[in-house]
Each structure stands twice: as C-alpha cells, then as structure tokens.
Image 1 (cartoon, one colour):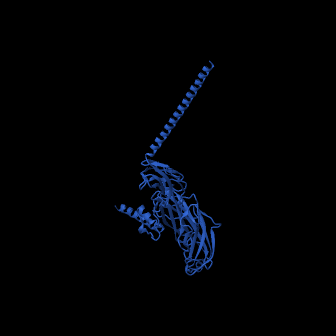
Image 2 (image 1 turned 90 degrees about the horizontal axis):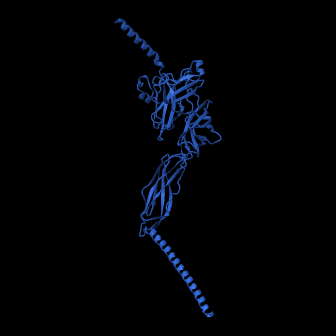
Length: 492
C-alpha cells in the first residue's frame, strides 16, 4: 500500500510541475474588446469560436477551425495557437469554416493593425482572395476542407516587446447574394525587441522616458460622384482625411490609393501630396476609378495609405479602405409582339411575347400584360427568370368581346407592358402599343356570299355572250344560203 501511495504522489507532483511550467507560455486569440484568460477557456468548439471572433456589423457566417493544426501552426487554436516569429516576419494562419455555402467558394480578407504607436509591423496594403480547399492537418496527414488564410507580415528592425493586435476582416457573399462580413483579432507576441517606451538614451542612462502619442490621420468620410455605380462606368471618389490630433500638425503627407480586384484607376497617378494638415484639420482628395464591365455585381475595395511626418520629423503611416458597391447594367431587347390586324367578335388568338437578355446580369420575374378596349387577355404571360445571354418567350390568349358603348365593332388601340427586375431587386417596365379592328362574326359570310354572287354573274354574262355569238353565226349562215338560192332561179 505504501508503494502505491508513493507512486501516485510522484505522478501528481510531476503533473503539477508540467502545468506550472507551461502556464506562462499559453496565449489566446480573443474577440476585440473581450480579453480571454485561462479561467474563460471554452471547452467546446462552439464556445471557442464565439470568443475567437468579433462581428463587424454585417451578417456573420464564419467560425474558426480550432481543433486542427495546419501548416505554419505549432498548436491548434484550442491548444493555444501563437503566430510564429521567424526571419523578421510574423506568420499568421487563420483556418475558417463558412456556416453557409458561399458564392464562388471564395472570401476576401483584409488585414489591418491596431492604433498603437509602437507596433512592430511594416505598413503595407494586405488584402487577398482565399478559395475553399482541402489542406493537410497534423492528424497523420489527414486533409480538412476550410478557407485557409495565411499572411506573412514584415517586422520593423527596431521593435518593442509586447502583444500587438492584428485585425482580419473577412467578407463574402452567399448564394442568395447576401453580404457576409466578420472580423477576427489575432495577437502577435514580440519577445526579441526592446521594452515598450524604452529608447537608446534611456538604455544607456538607465532612465525611462514617457511615450508620446503621435498624430493620427484617418479617413473621415468618402463619397462617390454617382449615386448608383454601374460596372463599366467611370466615377470619382472624394476622400476626406482628418488629423485627429488636437495639438500637433502633420507635414509632407503622401496619400496613395490601391484599387482592389476588378477596380481600375483612371488617373495618371494613384498618389496625392499634402504639404501640411493642421491639428484637427481636414482635407479633401479626389481620384477617378472604374469597375470592370465584366465584373459581377458586388462590393469592391480600394485601399488608402497615408505616409506623413510629425512636427519633429518623425515618420508615421496609416491606412484605410473605401468600399464601392457596383451593379451590372440592364440590357434588354423586346421584339414587337405580333398582333393580328383584324379579329372577329368572340374570336380568340394567341400572343407570344419574347424577351432577350443582352446584359451580363440575370433578369428576374419577367412577365407581360395586355390592356385594350374590347379585348380580354387570359392573364399575364409569365416568362420567368432570364439568364444573361439568353432569350425566353411566354404565351397569352386574347379574346375579342366587343368595344364598350353602343357599337361593339371598330378599331381599338392597346398596349402590352413588360415587367422585370434586376439583380438588385429594382423593377423596371417597357411598353409596346398596337392597333386592331374588331369585326362582326357575320362579316366573313357576307364576303363569301358576295364573292359567290360575283362569280355567278360572270358565268351568266359569259353564257349570254356565247348565245348571242351563236345566234349571229346562224343568222349569217341562213342569209348567205338564201342569197345563193335566189340567184339560181334568175339564171334559169
């Protein structure tokens, strides 16, 4: 019994030492504004994913795969993942799962840094499109499907120790066209730099200096020259920049724009120079862009980077982004509907309205209706959804029931109205006009009888003429015979 107790005590002591030794090395990913400690660690993947993300305001639809270890990761997120630091680069890996099927199986990820003065990262525009794929995990080479987001961030040579936030904004569209956006925050831990707030002078003299916050320049607002931006059309973006410092101006500011996917810069240069921006001041800059005509309807990003100096000559950088929503223009052609020129009272004819979609976007709920005095349609001709580059026809029956008023017959004028909606849900209409005569149902018989009477009259006239000719022939023959007979008697 004493040996068993001694063995159990030795195992418990060994486990306690391992826990104490591993404790300081554990770090976590947590949602912005909600720090996660050892006591708040989630035991389930669902709880862990809730604490590992922050919603940026759109429809959330992503979660972190916190159980698997992928290339570039030493531990899973559930096991305390920490981004690697190697060769002056921070390697961030974020495996994401989508809660619903995404359009094109693609997401767009934009990376930005926190508003800390002494952050260790070199400012660049970080944005990429990530496709769904199957990637090897640490589980004996098994592959798991996910959106594997990976960034390599350049680090400053002169950097300070500490934990620094990196925000990853993820956006996409589901198959119904709904925008999905979510933001995740990963903390990068630096241990090979100098202490925060420490300068070379303080290191030599052994005195600590108080850190002074640098002026910050941010995008205050932006607006476009068009209320509705169509793919293929030019537009101007007006950006308002704001110096948030109330006491210090910024000088020698260079502002650069970087169009994202499917966005084209139209100006000669994508940069603009601002000599000085006063404390608390604002300035406006304009750039011209165009979304590619072949681009699908959606939201596109334009990066904005600012490089400036403070009053003491210290250099600083800041970045932001503009979001532009573009739609495909509707290009529809509707051939004239073939309407009969005359229709008898009570007669029913069939019309076949046709729609050709010449644009690059889909048309929804296409239908046609008919309105005319004296004509009653069987209903609307529902054509349905029309894909880009296709032609679809519908059908409706129209019955002549007579004009309103005392006279049922005569000429009537009407119109055919086509209804359709674009991909943004905007409904549009087009109209066609026509004219037709409503006739009596007996008008056809009278014409037939008149035609028969005309034919009989010609037959009778021909018979009379033939009889007259025959009578004339007989008359002349008899006369000539009588003359010949009389002549013979005289000679005798």
